[in-house]
Length: 219
Ligand code: G3P
Image 1 (cartoon, rainbow, N blue to C red):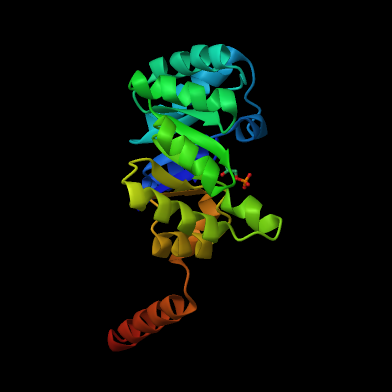
Image 2: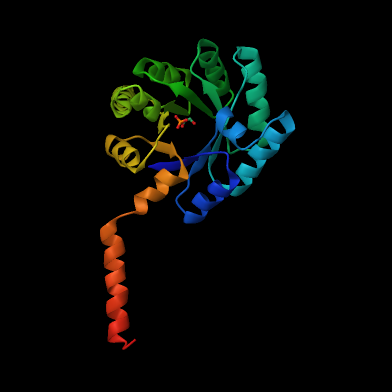
């Protein structure tokens, strides 16, 4: 299973990368705005800076909502670095754009996916990744993990190669459950990834080992 970090914060991306378990980065316009990144050149420079840190795919989202605009933006983004994956919303024009990018060998991430039907369309259009937002579904009392399970079944039925990128992951158990179901990738905040480290028995056990060692050494 691949781990992506869902942020545009360079410090957090570096911290996750230094941990040695990071496979890529996802961003979106809200996450870029949160870091105060605006203006075409600043956005481009920021994507370049992210690509310089990580060794893996970096999703960069288009802002246009029409086919021509998405193609223009996506081609510009893809030209920045081989790591760039063009993130395209699950709308009619987006599906057409994904099909176009796929025919040109440009990697895509179909975002804002909330149903199995949308995921099926994304796969048929040739998306590299599909991003079901599990946390946002949970927020509205709908089972986000069930959607991952449904998409897994559909993709396996037909051998679609589109990778299921579980997005809007909020906590460690989302990650563990996505792994059990067979999501190919999760993307979440650094806090969800580092929460996987935590277990009180690990902390207690280590404290005991160190105390026993010190005692034996006569300290
Ligand atoms: O990047 C897309 C997705 O992961 C957003 O997550 O937490 O804003 O629902 P969230």
